[in-house]
Image (cartoon, rainbow, N blue to C red):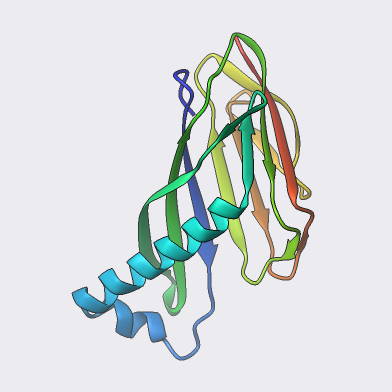
Length: 160
């Protein structure tokens, strides 16, 4: 997140791919680009179903990129989504809220928020445990596979 209100979000999905289908996909530039476009379109569809607010004003997250890679071996691919949106921030207390359809996570994923130098997270309601690093500027959480997600997130942060 930037003091200007630009929010750049990374969402990492990790998979188990015993048939190594992603190995085949990433071996062809054409298949890889097609898969990235499909993943981007699918993620954008889900983002469009959400209601995201910064300080009570609706904002509209957009997928601007997708990366596919591997951990340890071709059996463990990951998909990383790059998402951006713009909100109006103010000095003092700010809020981010996200309302979406409750669901069960089909795959594990992690979310990392990095706030401006002159900001700190005050509290968060994410439905899962979270950690704060860097004097409260970095918020991170992971959602294990099969976790019931409640459909609401709220982050309160102070900009000074």
